[in-house]
Length: 161
Image 1 (cartoon, rainbow, N blue to C red):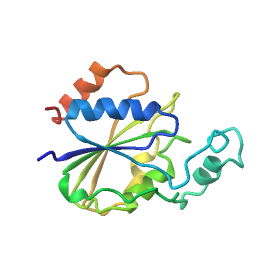
Image 2: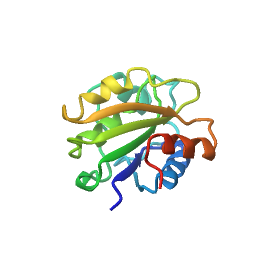
Image 3: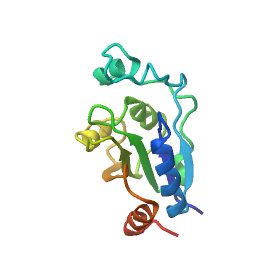
Image 4: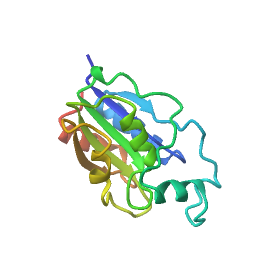
């Protein structure tokens, strides 16, 4: 049985492309985290302090609604969790995802895309959305890496087929 899930949120398609490569390299199931209300171009305008994403990211208690509940996590040991970096951290929809399922005893390895930001306080901010028995690890920024680098990273994690 496959014990790895690649779950990802992608607002523009960049993270989706990397997530598909990660899932292929790991031989893992793939799950897209979708907001109940899709983000528009105007919502994603980080220069506008009144845009949806600006408002969500300025309120750390924001939990955008999900289009669907997380899959049954009992089938997985490891979750590779991908997202774009917004304001130096994971989008708050990632907290929504983590709070919608039972990740107890799981290992979550993060990967992200960004125009130049790093993970910042992402691990610390996500830990509040899971049980104390969940391990969250900072993984890798995948913005500009090629598929062979992703395959090597997944192999180094011990997750390749």
